[in-house]
Length: 384
Image 1 (tube, rainbow, N blue to C red):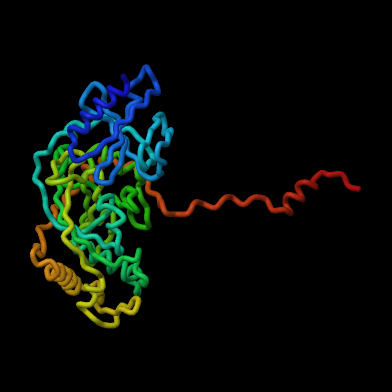
Image 2 (image 1 turned 180 degrees about the horizontal axis):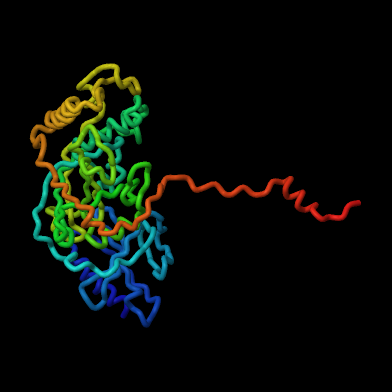
């Protein structure tokens, strides 16, 4: 009976999501609680998660997992759940969503925005990782990142090898749509979270001080998996100082909001993308040959005068022109994204502590030395 009800519930979920594939797994662990024994393993565009369907209604609880590999056929205890894998699945922290915010499951009635995003990346990154759970930028933001952190040591001298072996700029034509709860706050974009190797680190400020993954989870549960942004001019969360490219914008794109076609504004369908090309850093740097910045036998003057507004405007224009020459059938540029995030509405009270997630753990307190231990052992011992 449990298996039949689980299969029926799974068919209902799968029927509402034609682009997703599910494996229904019935686990009769508790005869008095059949719902607890039914799990669906979902594979959507390479993103895997477990779904516990509601046995008596249309709503499902979603349990995300990523990280620890399950062997085929393994039984794994996670919290109060036992998951069965018929394939190799990725598992990490499993957590139940809180009650759905009113309007989160509604298709929003706000406009769809279409614009270009850029991501500086090492060669082959997108062959290893699907686009999502990453940060990106407009061209101004990408150029600032490159000249501030990738090709120089924070503007102080040449960095070689390049940071993270970055060698390309990818361009994506992105469509975004806000969820209803976000639109009700007068915003098309949420806060920009920082991602590191697919993990959301929260908002990261200067000196790597971040608010943690729990910040991401709470806000995504509240607003859905919305695209985040920050204007350089707002100086929040980072860069938190004036920069030479005041028009810079950085974005965060959560994989949980990526879908096909045109985004609907549902909690799990806030953005889509196409991949219309890439240029290499060497192609860009060859536009200005010289000796100012040399790495691995390749020299350029492309990054000269980093604090000069005119030079930075020329850098941006040259990069856009290079994309246009390589991809003449595509627009050179698209209208900019309306990055209208308002942190005072998003965070009425910001209770999140800031910590450095990359900092090494503190060294243990030194214990007593051998001499101290010997003296302590001899203390009070009889002589002779």
